[in-house]
Length: 210
Image (tube, rainbow, N blue to C red; front, side):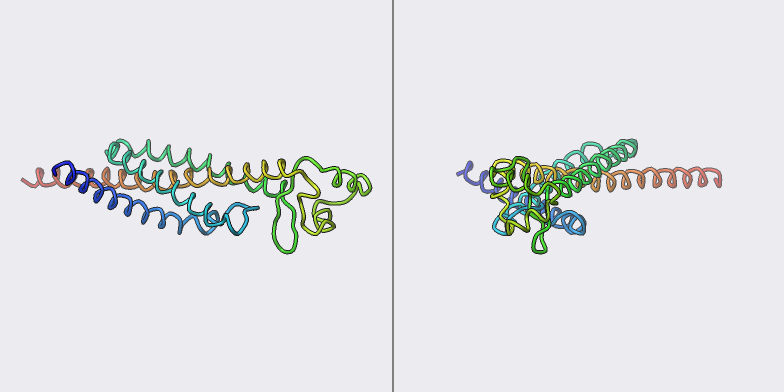
């Protein structure tokens, strides 16, 4: 009975903790959603929810790890460390974001108002068509094949690029999450420093008045 009650309490506590992390992930998602949270390019409508949920799960896990770190390193002397972590995460995150944008421009084509992922290896049909039309652009090539990219490039090369784009996209989420939480923790630590200085000055003035 004791083991069952202990397991029940643990489950209730785990649910509360996960609910807190999920709410934090939604909050961060609202901040990142302005420029990052739409699903990676080339994802089908059926897989869109899967990628969004994966992104939210990653943000929630990273948020939990940062909360643990914040409880461990919460002294005023840690403010500079948190600031350095935020700056480093920002630099790497922005680099990953621009890399994702660069790959998106290089590995996609516009067709019917949306972007489609193109491959790196031509099929026999695609190679023959490009040899007949050496100056054709990628957009025109996709348009001529009516959006059927598998007829132009091999399925393996298309899927490979799609996965690289998705991995680059997903890597941005934890980096920006770390940046946001680290800067918040740095600000809180710096506020403790200012509060201590204010209290120290007040105590010195009270001593002088005596």
